[in-house]
Image 1 (cartoon, rainbow, N blue to C red):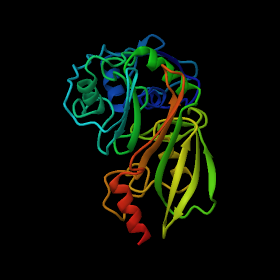
Image 2 (cartoon, rainbow, N blue to C red):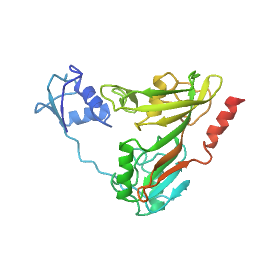
Image 3 (cartoon, rainbow, N blue to C red):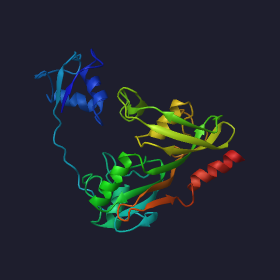
Image 4 (tube, helix red, strand yellow):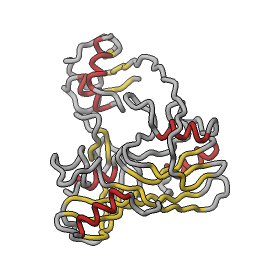
Amino acid sequence: MILRAEDELNTRIDKWLSAHTEDLSRSYIQNLIEDGRVTVNGKSVKSNYKVADEDEICLSLPQSIEPEIAAEDIPLDIVYEDDDIIVVNKPKDMVVHPAPGHYSGTLVNALMYHCRDNLSGINGVLRPGIVHRIDKDTTGLLVACKNDRAHNSLSEQLKVHSITRRYRAIVHGIINEDEGTVEGAIARHPNDRKKMCIDERRGRPAVTHYRVLQRFKGFTYIECRLETGRTHQIRVHMKSINHPVLGDEVYGPSRCPYKLQGQCLHAMVLGFIHPGTGSYMEFTSDPEVPEYFSKLLERLEG
């Protein structure tokens, strides 16, 4: 990987690289530098090297060894299934695909058992069938593909933002207007690789539409419609207007007034053009929101 320094000059190279590469932590980059896998203008440097204008930075990543992912007999809440696709209702606390620290118990492990060898292979051995994902602590609808033709079709629909995705969320504070739109390009946080942030210079365009469903004392129940689908989009956008999602341990207040397992965010509606028939299909989770969500709404109403 070759990068050319044109911004954030006079910054330590480990910090600069962590802000300009995807999914690489600063500590991992420091190890690469120590192993001589980072050069500037053809020469090895130390982590405290300050980036200069027009520096040519070469990053050599070691070849990764992907672990073998096992099929696991994990129950799935299947909403729809045919020879091309499978739509599931993902529960809380389930990671979508294997990653460091989560190589079992994921949705992919469950899909591999249920679908056997009938999953698309475009995203590699760690993400068979996976076209899009939702966060570990977000519940709701997700579609996976059983072949590459279906995968390509849905990927293109995601690319042109034609897939319908509507979420339900409970957020902090009272939203006075009945509806609104949040626009803000989203990028990886420069100092915390586990977080995203609004950054109009580095980020990718993101648009979230919301409407108020109900107001409570100190909280608002809303529906969000995604025009784009960036990582943590709703969570970042709602925080940006000072209404973070209730229970969000990353973007919300450090103290939550209720005992929750992650954010109150549910992917309720999913719609797309079927890759085989060409007909539009739309699914709504049943019940509309999971039990933990409905019980919290009852408490807030009480």
